Image 1: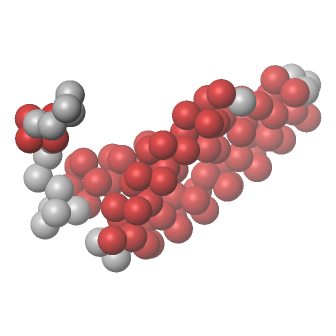
Image 2 (image 1 turned 30 degrees about the vertical axis):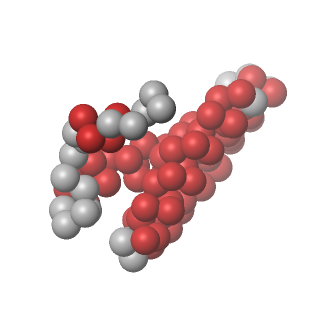
Length: 97
């Protein structure tokens, strides 16, 4: 359950950034792929391997983190060429005050 709560931070941050850039398709594609993988993993872990609640939780964790990883890779690996120029020390300029 804690892993799901931690997944919300990059999820909302990336979604707001991508929506501001009008890159809504990547959010949709990542969610659709995540849903498909979640359904398959749920069947595989719960029914086929009989992991029960542990299998359901594992499937849910993967389904929550997969779109986050896809969106982060999209942003950092060239999907937003005009707006993302990489992380620099300016990001940490006023961190302590």
